[in-house]
Length: 75
Picture (cartoon, one colour):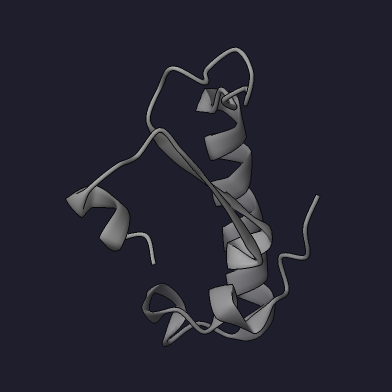
């Protein structure tokens, strides 16, 4: 799992009036809800789909099967 404590999340507008510890706990709860619903894409099995995978909060991107105008929005 990634570091929830990164400033990029606890300083978001959602937590403007929330102290840091409460913001971190709320974000951890959000992640738990997302994980219940989330089905990760497989780079090989889903290679016919168009998608952008974001790793480590934007450290790396995988842009798959996206061409033309749409691609310019990913840069």
